[in-house]
Image (cartoon, rainbow, N blue to C red; front, top):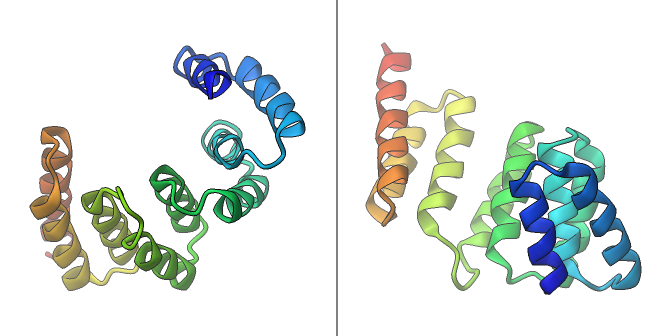
Length: 155
């Protein structure tokens, strides 16, 4: 766990090479460490845009730590990026059953999916749900801006 905290610090500092190297060593040393695999997936998705490799790590992490909320946010974001709507919906629905999941973030991802598909009513419904569930002021503002964006797109 301590090593994961160090890797997170590297990521915050922009030390991607150090984070990548430490993650690789940790995964070899602890192949059953699902959080390390999830972090590797996140790094590959966000920093290297290596989506196939990121997905492999997310899938492995799902088998190892299926109750870790952070994994769902990242894996759903990846599926959204890849325009895999049906898989995204299935994973989002599954994530709502995970203890400790922040439902506002899941509803926001649902809304983004529907916005991409130009299903405006569904997008409005889920951005509104995200607004209702959030306890974070910054999220509240983001969700409100998203609703305004939909109004503009609708015309």
